[in-house]
Amino acid sequence: MTITRYCFTCDLKDDDVLIAEYKAHHKNVWPEIIASIKEAGIVDMQIYLSGNRMFMIMECDETFDPVQRAKKDANNPKVQEWEQLMWKYQQAIPWAKPGEKWIALEKIFQL
Image (cartoon, rainbow, N blue to C red; front, top):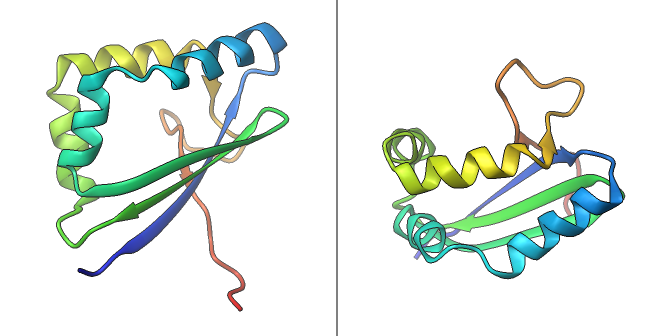
């Protein structure tokens, strides 16, 4: 099995109460969201936080297609409900395009 790693960044609103709520949501991610992630070919996903900047690392198998995933997620009411909830806490980084949230990181070094 071929695994591809994708890395993204996004900001949380700089508010300690909202950040705590966001963390709490991620201790109990809805089962429908977990199912959607796994169904897309994402075999591992981790989110790290530094201040209010987040970093997401996804490891995906060869079936992962980000365009197809976006289409399926757009038609999944539970995923859309989760995304709306997350916008309460998340904000785009300054260089994001309108409507963009998670921005791909550019790999600049590997040992």
